[in-house]
Image 1 (cartoon, rainbow, N blue to C red):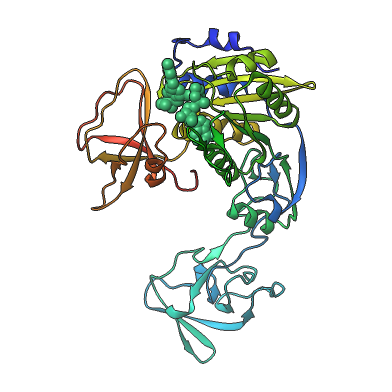
Image 2 (cartoon, rainbow, N blue to C red):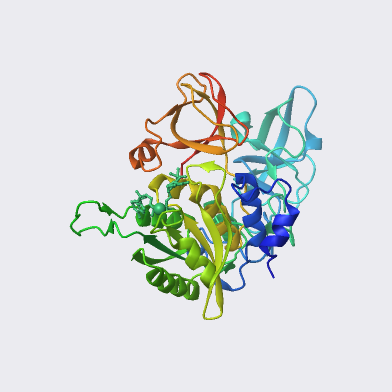
Length: 425
Ligand SMILES: Nc1nc2c(c(=O)[nH]1)N[C@H]1C(S)=C(S)[C@@H](COP(=O)(O)OP(=O)(O)OC[C@H]3O[C@@H](n4cnc5c(N)ncnc54)[C@H](O)[C@@H]3O)O[C@H]1N2
Ligand code: MOO
Ligand SMILES: [Mg+2]
């Protein structure tokens, strides 16, 4: 059972129903999220980007046995003289993939290749470029080696029975390699989250349709779809919904029945055609509305029910930049958590502002900027018109400048936090 809105509100000091602080809203949402229930087994390649449903316990130790990190000669460090040269008698060769060789007596060394098993009793490898051959002997100068050099120890990568990857991890290329190194061909992941999207608005037209006066092309479904694709969720596109309560009721009901989460754009403000919150309340509850942020202030979050199923509904404001900013600020992490992931905080840059920025204390602002590193120092320049309908300045940006709740105006040269878009938006 997820806690009730009232229970969470009661637990949060500083809750202001007129405009909830961004950090409190983020905390609210986190506590409301249902966790995934169904998992499935997938082959490694199909599992890229998916979320691990259980810890992967290493069924092997990696490396399985001590082996060489260099092409050279395996020896006993205790045979090395402290000064001058050491001469060791060469006995045999170890190649990668060959069975372990027999034990060698003191005063002997063995030719060994990278990845070959260390002969029993030998503990150190000297790279061949540091040595000289003299008939059956290998000559090694003093002072080059310490015991254990260039030897890879059994289990130094992964110990038998250790947690190789923890549940909640979003599988990345190195993880697929790690799983393969354990001989695992399949992995248990959570089912992909289903997210329904829709744009609301009588003025919206689909691509390829004529554009009568007063109408605009629906761009929000494309940015929403793209951001969701990047997250790796399954997108159910419910198209454009007209500004009529009946149409919205039908679309929301269908979305709640089919999806785990629903994202709508538009209709959350106070206009005469803004029906989102009312229909949200009819089909479930509005958990909160209005955040102390810009852009994105009228965002509404609720739960809707249909056919015995409940879905979280993110009612994003219609303005195209507000859609992207609220997605970044709230939706992305929520969907990752609902997918079973334990997301890390996103990496931020500290960059010097190239201009003065107007900022009102008492709300969080997200400004679009371009970060560069001209003289080894990060700097950020705002991309022109910051109106929340101006998509071109979002498209030019490579990051969002985050100005916190208490922050006031920013002067030239002041350091600000920047969230780089790379891989995100
Ligand atoms: N009296 C007030 N008016 C407004 C307030 C307010 O506090 N008091 N807040 C403003 C803010 S801030 C925002 S953001 C918008 C939010 O509006 P809605 O969520 O109701 O969105 P709409 O009215 O439906 O649309 C707003 C704007 O965005 C365009 N739009 C909508 N959907 C799309 C789409 N899919 N693709 C492209 N463009 C879209 C729409 O045509 C409007 O221009 O409210 C302010 N008003
Ligand atoms: O909060 Mo609205 O997104 O600025 O225009
Ligand atoms: Mg409106």
